[in-house]
Length: 277
Image 1 (cartoon, rainbow, N blue to C red):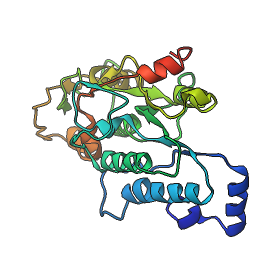
Image 2: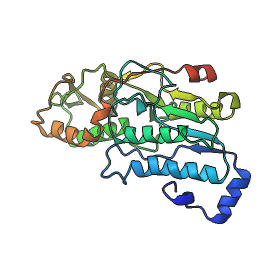
Image 3: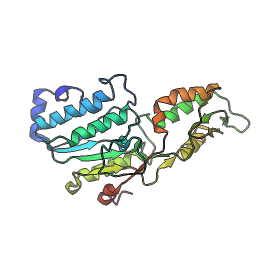
């Protein structure tokens, strides 16, 4: 339990780790986007938890540290984001991004570990072959919400549900860096098991991000509706019909992610793992 001192381990377990463990992979985190207090999530796990993991490494004299951050510590930046850049004064889009930037800075400022290896994945989705996922955040929140809303409507003569009264405040060309979990695992595992790649930062993001229009099209095809309108980023939803009002109410927590992503430089991971396109 990373929110507990000593990670909740007893003295016997602490002695065991000090003797047998040579590295830490810190990839536990809260995905909460909006905090109710500075002591609550995501700060409790992402900042306080990282402090506890670092203290655990110090006590166990573990110097090799692998930290899973996120590409979205870039916040609201535009243009090309280098793997070498951390805090350049960027505005953050939500409390999750704020907490993850603070956590990465904590790891980098720690002097009792070797230069850390930092992994910054994009938006992790399910297995690239089977689609299997264990969590329903981000893209899956929209998928689950639209599926639920569709169940309350009858198909028309096309056999599909007409959604032309649902208007989205998107242009359609906004990009999202969705990346399958099995690729992220493979890339991390390769770096972990090749010490010559340690001590660097890796953007684990796709070369070709998907667009909001493609996401809309996939939702339409998979759930069986048509006609949802992309009205532009400046459109203010009137929410004058039930379906539209429900969608915007439930997806509001993710509003900060319906923006244009920057371009993430992937030079380090492309050099380290060219066999994993």
